[in-house]
Structures are given as structure tokens and as C-alpha cells.
Length: 222
Length: 255
Image (tube, rainbow over all chains, first blue to last red; front, side):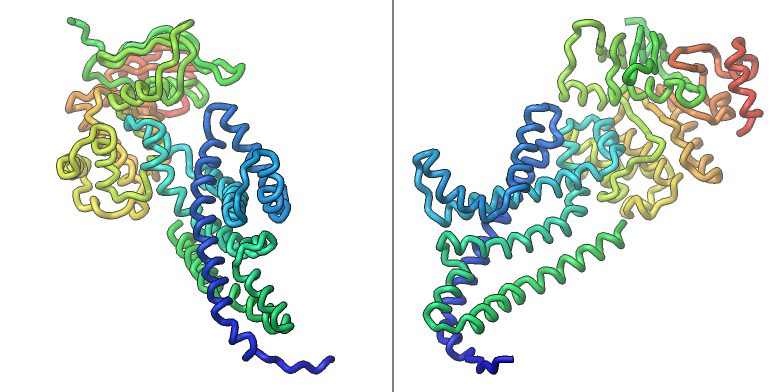
């Protein structure tokens, strides 16, 4: 084994860069989780629509994004899409669009699954009272389904948090990108990437604990 | 209008795939009367009941409930979801498996229809709900969640929930079939009171004793047709048709 002297003090001098990078990563995650949930809700509901056109369109969207590597999608949206449309978009916008659509395709499946898991008798009872199907969805089905969706949606969001590290290839200044800058500056790759891994871990640890608790609470309430 | 008939069904047809479940059903229910629908499983009685509030959309025929009529014949266009909802708000339905809303308390379950369909103010809806819960003997259970109730209590809440919409008719779909035997009585008691109040009711049931006692008329169905229909006591005690007799022989005057 090679003897190696760790020098975290060098890394510490760059703490502001790490902080800025963590800020971008967290902010980006919040943006793509929020937008992704909106996209996922629409696509998930479209899966359940009576119109075959809507069902087909959302199916095409979901599978296209689920079955393509995220890195390929990022590169495509940043480099290829502007060639196709003639509209240039900056790296951050391309990242947000790609990650939102990618996350949305997974969220859509969770949301669709949560809705169909509610017994049809619930909808029937709402309809029998004279509610319109839209109101039944809002008042009866969704409130129950959301409870079941929360653990898998949070799991998916944790994955999204880690997925944001890929935007560093587009030079979006997230945690990993800043780390790469520091590593090149200091030649201290070992310390830098260890610190980066630790930051991702520390941010996600409390979230996974919350998911576990939510799952347990759900199991009890059923 | 001198017509005393609350529900009028004519030429009703429905099939699931290639299997016809209702073939040309004609039925009239007088205002304030109670009709028991009996028959073996698969006879179409539940489907008929669900057609009356459009949970199942028929393929042909006509349904009138009170002053509200729907025709399903030929090129008659399918009604909009909104029109169907309005039609359903006029009929109360109680299900075999209660279908209470588990995310709402008992009183919220009963308030839900008036609030979200009729736009009734919350306080008024709650007052009505509490009164109905008292009527079904559950005034102390308003603030618990349905999961804390017995099957018989759940079903009484379901009846109160349907009544909160002040429907013109009440439809009961095997409402005691999922209950433990000792809980059947409390639900039938509530239904008996409703009948005495003059509610127009159609009851799909296997409780022959109850049908004979409470129903004015009994309709026996088999294979999607009405085989025999008449005054309750007559059909149950002295059926005219052989198939009715065979069906009833399984019950041995139980209940």
C-alpha cells in the first residue's frame, strides 16, 4: 500500500467554492424535483385518460426518457436541440429541462401507480354522490393516493439529487464541477473527491431517514 | 302529472363483451314503495341497480328517475360527465363494501356530498350530517375515522352519507352481504325505518325474510331477464315460476 499523507487543509481553503457548488446542486435539485413532479403529474394523469391519443403521447414521452441514459439526454438537449431548433439555450436551462423531463418520466409511473392502487369502489362512491370525475379525482382519489406515493416519490427525488452531478459535463457550476476545478488547481484529487462524496452523503442521509419513517408510518396506517 | 311512478325503466339492455347481462328490462317503481331485487349471482340484478344511477352505462333503453330521464337508444348521444353527475346526485347508492372515504372522519364522509356537489356551507352540512348520524344511531361516532368502526356501523354511515344528498330514491346493493351475521340486523333496522318514512327504495338482497317483510314488491331476475314480479309476500311464499321456486328453496325461510 502506498503511503499517502492526507491534506484536507488545502481543500479547506476552497471551502467557499464547495459551498457555492453545494448551493447550486441543492437549488438545481429543488427546481428539477418541483418541475419534474408537475410534468409527472400531467403525464401520469394522461396515462389514465380516456382518450387513446393522450395515453399514447404520455406513454411515448415516459418510455423515451426512461430508456435513454441521462448523460446522453443532457448532451442532446445542450448540443443537438439548438442545432435542430436554431434556439441556443444556456447550460443551466438545458440541465433543468433535461433533468425535469427525465425525473418526470419516473414520477409519472409512481403517480399513475398510486392512483390505480386506490380501490375502484372509492371512485364509485364519489360518483354516486353526484361528483364529476374530476372532482372525484381531486377530493377522493388523489388525497389517498398521494399518501401512498410519498415514499417512492422521495426515493426518486433522492436519485434526482445525485443525478444533478451529471450537469458538470455541461460546465454548470454544481458541487462536482467546482470540485473538479479545485482538484485541478491543487492536484489533491483524493481529498477533493472524498469531500464531495461526503457532502452528497451528508445532505441525503437525513432525507433517507425521513423516507424510512414515512414508509413505516404508512405501513402502520394501513 | 298524476303519474305516481318514481322510477321507470323500459327496454334496458347491457352486455359485457359478448355476454348479455340485461335483456330488455322493464320495471316501474311507485313513489314511496320498496322493491326487492332477488336472484342468483350473475342474474344481472346488481348491474340493473348500477344502471339506474349510471355507474354502468346501458346500451339501450330508457331510465327515468323522478323528472329526470335518460335515453340510451340508437343514436342518442352519450351524455356529458357533468349531466351524469347531476343525474346521480338525485339517487342515493349504498354499496356492499361500504366504500367510505378512509381519509375523512365519519362526519366528513357524510358532509362531503352536500359540500362538494351542492356547494352547501360547511356549518349547514355539518348540522345536517350530525342529524343524519343520530338518525342511524351513530351520533357519538362523528369524529372518528371509518377504520375504527364495525362493518354494521360503517354501513350505517354509508346510508347517512347517501341520505345527506336528499336523493329521490335509494339504491341498496347487497348491503348486508359483507357483514358478520350479528351486525346485519342494525343495518336492516335503519333500512326498515327509511321505508317507513316513505323513501322510494330498490334493494338487491339475499335477505328473504327482510324482503318479504319490508318490500312492497319483489322482482326475481335470472340470466338478465325479469322472470317473475309481484307483491313481496306472494312471490316469496307462492312463486308462480319454477325457477323462482328452485331459487327460493335454497333459503328455507331463513331470516
